[in-house]
Amino acid sequence: MFSAVATKDPVAVEEQVQAAYLGMFPGGDRLFVPKSFRWVVECFTGHYKGYQAIDARYHDLEHTLQGTLCLARLLANRDREGVLPRLTQREFELGILAILLHDTGYLKRTEDTEGTGAKYTATHVLRSAEFAATILRQHQLSAAEIQAVQSMILCTGVNTALDKLSFQSEAHRIAGLALATADLLGQMAADDYVDKLPVLYGEFAEASAFSSERGGFVNLFSSPEDLINKTPGFWRDFVGPKLGGDFLGLYAFLNEPYPSGPNFYINRIEKHMERLMARKQSGL
Image (cartoon, rainbow, N blue to C red; front, side):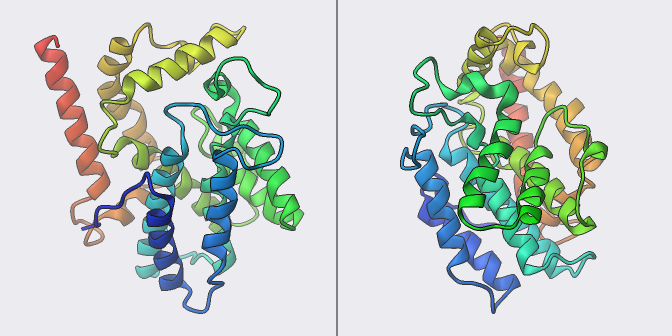
């Protein structure tokens, strides 16, 4: 079973990702993980030129770190099982860059003083892909590598038509679907997931207020309580089928032992859903 990691601490998560990376690729670039984390921490803390520190309260740096930790664990376990196609060192690196950058679309430019980055909820996936291209170009990644990272980021869109995305290889597709899996599991298994649902609703409400469109998922909830009450159904009817279908059941590589052992993330989420159902039934 996985050990507890302080996901508010970038250094603690970085150590776990570095261990997974070097476990898969003992001769890998020991500077890659620290360097990548430094880039992203700079972005989220207001040290990237032209951008403010993140001010979205739910999609913050910890949210990104939760997903990154989950992805590293998933890919390391999958590699240990020898499942084909095996990810190369560079493919793993691109996957880590993609998840570290997958929510940079919530960042606001320096001159953007209205509202918080949550107003970009409905467009943040495309904004994240654009931001990723900008920063990775500055760090001399090739056009093909940037395109691969962007395709992986696009996998996280709620309504993304995955069959329409262009991947350079099956391994790139696997990395993208693993990223989308980890994005969902990392946040929903967090200790404070239930308690932060009102904060998530606040982001949706702000996005709705800033949007001229009345449709879309940001308008699905009328109040924090409405979101809380609908979350078990979201898990049962959307996330679960998505994980097992579109995302190829990759979550199973988090089973310990593989393939049929308990799943740390799924078990925690199920407990959250039980808590929410009990709350709904009690009327609290």
